[in-house]
Image (spheres, one colour):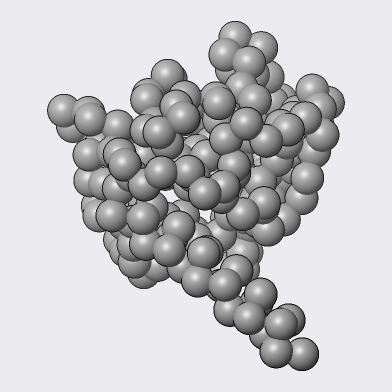
Length: 207
């Protein structure tokens, strides 16, 4: 399965693509950052980002797209730009009937490092380790985009249908695939998912 991760931003929009095998091992396909100058009019900046995202989609043809969920920050101006680029990414994916997953930064950090409050250096370090890279992808937007792609891929059952857009970060539970080759963070997530399912089943039986 091929997943495109997009870390939305108006000045820098991170792009990361990974292929994930049946053993859940991700492989780097592409990483880049779409940049726009603050001196340009807003509409021109959005057009440049849109064209960049669409070019990547057409060239690499991912099966699914992961976008960082926009959340409130103190800098309203930054949030607005992030939200606008996020909308462009969602539209581009929907126009190609691609499945979309929205993930909060904490969800991504937990999936990659096992800790939802990890800093950018820790996330970048784990991305490089998981993808077996010699160095951390730069700038941080690139590493964040790859982290999004990896997180999304690990949260979708391999072999599941990947057509038709979906919203929100609630995705199908992972299938009971063998844990060989999984990172510590992924094994922890898998165990938590299975534990939740087990508790839910026992609760239903008890009723």
